[in-house]
Image (tube, rainbow, N blue to C red; front, side, top):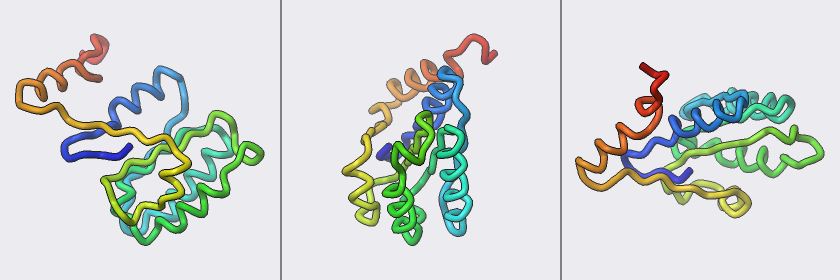
Length: 132
């Protein structure tokens, strides 16, 4: 996901994973989180877990490592159920090869207060009757 200010795709992604009954792991990247993220990817590749790395734009120094990891993913060495989801604000430091080889999604917030409130009330978990 390529983010814009005010957008957060995590609730939708969590619901999507829950609807598909998929194991899900996420981490917000920042200083010192690279090693943990790499372990999560390795585990996910083995057992088919979906892995979400949030805020990739905050881990600029780890992006070459992420690029190396992604280049090493193939059908031969990865569980078919594994998915790697990345969120980032637009950044010239984000590896171009990952962008070229991945599916890009944007999630923009609604424009205006009324549209923003309506969007909040129609999204999960608030729109789910079981939530209450």
